[in-house]
Image (cartoon, rainbow, N blue to C red):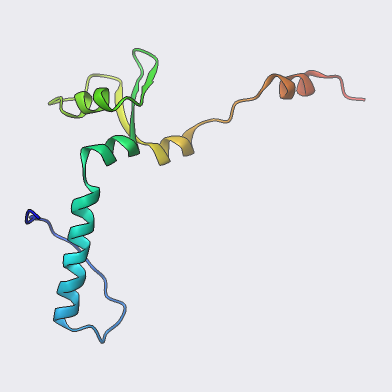
Length: 105
């Protein structure tokens, strides 16, 4: 595994952990992050909003093209899917619209 150069802040709840146990936890955390921080996992977790084309891009190849650009184009946004699904406005189906338009008795 390639050694990573990163700063991690790890809060230890248990005061009985010694330095060796903390180092072991950091190694496990680095190993986990190394496996998860891939382009595939990034593309699975993100989508691109292209406002000028009125499109949401889910295609891995197109997302990789966008993130490798030196600068995003205007009105192009890379968004985490969990956040974008949270921001989506629920849509009404035709049945709900008919119920809303029906005269009240």
